[in-house]
Image 1 (spheres, rainbow, N blue to C red):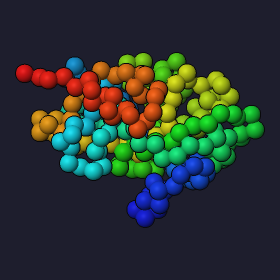
Image 2: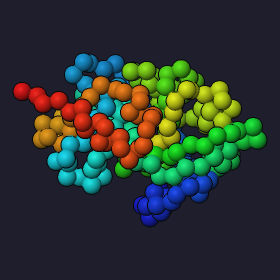
Image 3: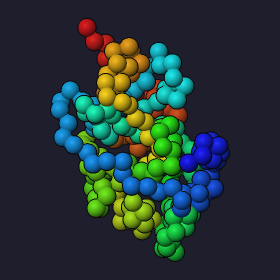
Length: 210
């Protein structure tokens, strides 16, 4: 996707964001694999005040995948706009007559901002759902949007555009440099409260390691 189009999309607010999504829903990048204990999949990655990259300043990231091949996560505290579920379904070319409720769309990271994900509680699953852990799963499928609009979807969910990605060893090096720390997953931190205060709430849980 042209970078100018992406920048324009990320500058949008409200319903126009959702109507644009008809062209950008995309399959999951790759299947998840088993994670060893030293990896951070299923945990929250928190940017420290020392983070120098503006793409990740004061971000809270749910880690979807982390292994010897690299890492992938979704930023959960940068909302783009809010709109009706029905408008999102229309934008995706799906029926929306019986859909109700509103959703907030988040910028999930700077990598492939045309990709669309739903981070949600694991009480819902379909054929394109990846159950990550900590009671959470990720689905990239219009059917979950339809289910949410019909009150048949997961109890908790957020909608994310794009993701954060790291090459093999890159995230580990950034953690050693003091740019990140991790905490156990917390559904209330992800789904509840003011998004603008998520980083502050998460940063307060930082542990001093000796």
